[in-house]
Image 1: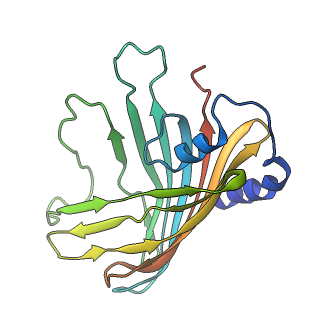
Image 2: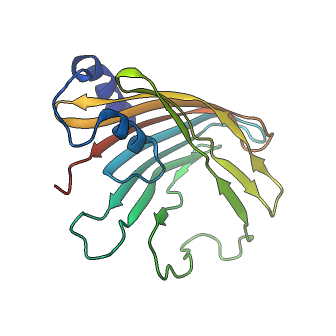
Length: 214
């Protein structure tokens, strides 16, 4: 699904990237919104991370996910622009060619009582986990919608002592297909720690709706 979408996006970029129709948001702002962890515009993100080799196991890995960022409209009753990010891992493949449904992640920036995390299915006697996830992000905007980005996903597992320290650098572009704002990127990474993936590459495409609430 993501491969087909990227093919359409990349194939159409040469014909529509120079569209100068007026927009409520400028192109630099759309580049910033497309690369922000939680943006202030409604958007749907498709992402696929492929890992051909691991440090500690044989086989390949792949994760395809869909994420939706949903800000509240301008005519909201609440006094804050609540921003939510829902990430759905549609297909998760681990070494051994086993594919399943991964963890659903929901980030909400304005929650009064989030309650406790819940779990369903799986082994009730599985070991406890305690991990810290860090994902700094940096984007440098170039001309004509091009940008360079880095968003390494670092993981520190306190129970096992394992860690993932990837170094990555990607490139992408924000442009239009007809009247639709889109963004796509490719970002290879190398894990400097000897736990988990050895190296891999992440592909992503976003459909942005900057004027959705207008």
